[in-house]
Length: 138
Image 1: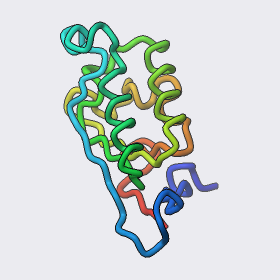
Image 2 (image 1 turned 30 degrees about the vertical axis):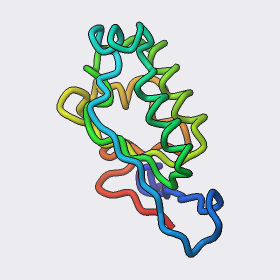
Image 3 (image 1 turned 90 degrees about the horizontal axis):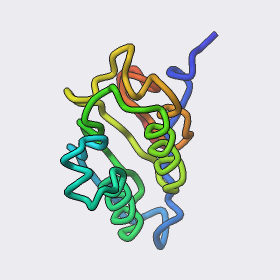
Image 4 (image 1 turned 90 degrees about the vertical axis):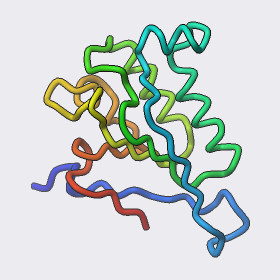
């Protein structure tokens, strides 16, 4: 039996732009540090606003793919409710999202990416969790 990690393929939706011959648009962000008290305070107490702003910017430029590279979360000890809310935001964004865990949120056995629903949205690929070594798009 093959695991989900071996069979799940990323899909780039080319339907956003004028046609299949256009450039692929990738939006990259890192170091959002969601769940950090100081970061939340800097954003008016809304601890998911940095992520929602990145996704809104990606939507505005009709991105084909969003790459969140490292330290999306401040640490791996976040509440399940927060992870559920974050997974819902990612799942509802309408774009493929690739997450590369960082030194603040490594893909360890107790990782935010392994607890709760973070790996559940079909549009989200997490290197080291849903995909062992690489994420391919067709």
